[in-house]
Amino acid sequence: MVANRGFTLVETLIALVLSSFVIVLVSHAFLVQNRFYSTQTQRTAAQDNVRASTELIAREVRTAMEEGIVVAGARTLTVRSPIAVTVVCARSGSAKDVFLDGGEGALDTDEVGGVAHRDPATRDWIPVNTTWAAIDGSGNAAANCAANGADTVGGSGSFHRLAGLNPLFGPPPGEGDVVMLFRETTFKIQPSILDPSTLGIFRAAYGESLVEFATGVDTTAQFQYRTVGGGYADTVSAASLASVDAVRLVADARKPAPTGGVEDITFGWSVNVPLRLAR
Amino acid sequence: MRVGGEDGFVLAFVVFMLFAISVAGITGYLVVSSEFELSKYSSQGAEALAVSRAGLERFVAEHIGTVPDTTVFALGNGVATVTTRRLFAQDSLTDVYYVRSDGAVDDIFTPGSPARRAVGGYAVHHRRPLAHHATVLIAADNIDVDNGGEVHGWDYNSASDCPGGNADDITGAIARVSVSEGSSNDIEGSPESEIWSGGWTEMTDSVGLRWDVLSDPDFPVDHVNSLPDFGAIPPDSFPVIRYTGWVYANFTGRGVLIVDGVFDPSPSFSWDGIVLAEDVDDIIQGYIDGILVAGFEGPNMYSTVDFRTDVNYHSCEVYGANESLSYLELLPNTVFEVN
Image 1 (spheres, each protein chain N blue to C red):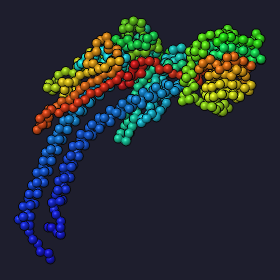
Image 2 (image 1 turned 180 degrees about the vertical axis):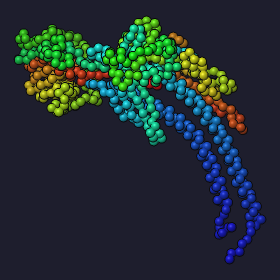
Image 3 (image 1 turned 30 degrees about the vertical axis):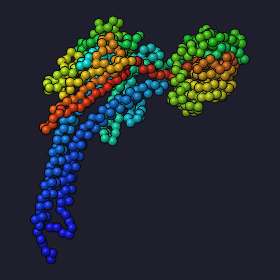
Image 4 (image 1 turned 30 degrees about the horizontal axis):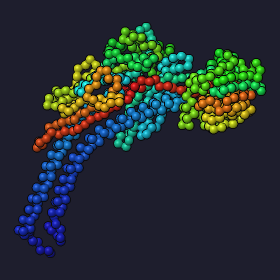
């Protein structure tokens, strides 16, 4: 049998000192990690906010139609982008029967801000602001288009009648002409409603009110525009809008530091969007 | 209880350190995963858009012949599915089509739920693009038809027994400086002959075909440097066949014969349809029911071409072969991202 002996006083003291040291060390590490975690959570939220919002803007800007930049200001951007491009496959009086991929059901009709006619000679778009309610017609568009050679099998629901186009254009669209339904979206950077200490990014469809969809944006936020053969500028005059070939959105995020923090959390972010589709 | 040289503090220290490392790891993961997800979905969406756009452009650029309903391309990390729908018959030679390309990009992180984007656009389908200027159109200075040869621009298919049959008569022969015949009936047509002093550029600009595309080795045709088994394909099938180099043609066939080089037909050569050649030999033999066009890249290598063969305009054969050359042309400013 082995003799049992207790700890000596020295052993106990050494153990207590070492244990205390380790506990202090681990506690400190835990607190540092906790603050780091909180900071990073805030930073992540800030990043998510501006990245998600700039992605949304970039998608609409990227698909802008030719000469689709309508207003190019430092904190205001209005852009026209196609919702659907169609071909007039038949005429019925002043109504035009067109092909809409997926039919009206696949169309975000609330977003329709206008209609554009592609000039058959110059191939340029002639845009006119209007609403879906003003041009939505009714009739058997599929049958009329089929009579002009359209293949409507399995897709009759994708043919639709547009009315009221004739008064909108000089020479009205004829059969075989290309017509575009476009959205006209305005983005604004202005004081946030949700967090007045920061800026927010707002969006409005044509004829609609501004809606805030991103907050916590730093005061440095702005739109910048690159023109063909030139550099970036924060404002482009109306006469030069057609030469804009890229849009950059600078949207730095700023959030108050978590408890114990001194400086705000910032996240520098910008996205550059070349205009490339429907040109 | 302590046994031997064991030291209990080591275990406690390891446990504490594991805890600390775990906290740091979880924090790092939360930060990185959010960023990773955002960038992943963003890049995959952009890649899917690029795939769909590439699919549409490739389809339009490479398509020749009848427009298929569905075509699938593997492009990069994704797949583009291109579908078409005819929307409007502009006239008897051109239709307007809607072309839609659905791009999908998948990866190991998103099995079964790929990023998808779609683009649509409109294209004109040139159903029979070759202009019927003449039975023989060669960018050579002189064309001589003698020694038993005949070149006729009268439609040899006088009955309307095929699409495009019983067509209007066309010019017999066109050259740059002169067209001559051995006897008065060797060349027939309406008119018998024409002189296009403008040379080969005038000809290539007017013929309605993109020779640079058709002669491109990467442009897909039905057969390259070989003939199909004509007995095994439908009688109304007119394949597109491309030969390169100096082609001593001693075969029989039908369709569109593209010679990216020198077309040198032998007496046994017989063809129904269209023959397109960069250059032709100075002596043309054999028999052609259709149209011959040559001199696409400059004046013909021989300034005088002697026809010792019969070349007769045959609207049915030309109609059928011409459909095999049909192509799509994207309408500018019509490509858009389908929402």
